[in-house]
Length: 35
Image (cartoon, rainbow, N blue to C red; front, side, top):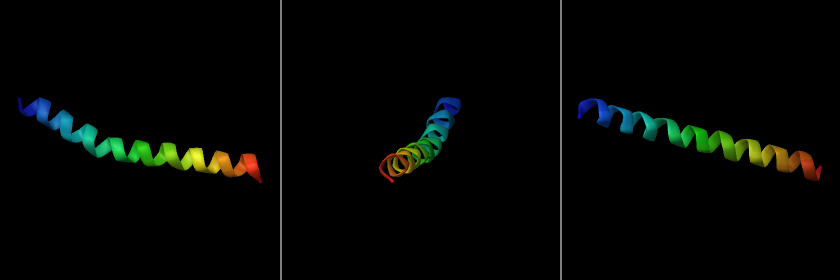
């Protein structure tokens, strides 16, 4: 049970970073496309 909770917390900690990176790359590629 503790292991499962730790994995859930890890995914919660990692997920926002991946979302930020994904949106960052999307924005930069968008700017490169329009400039």
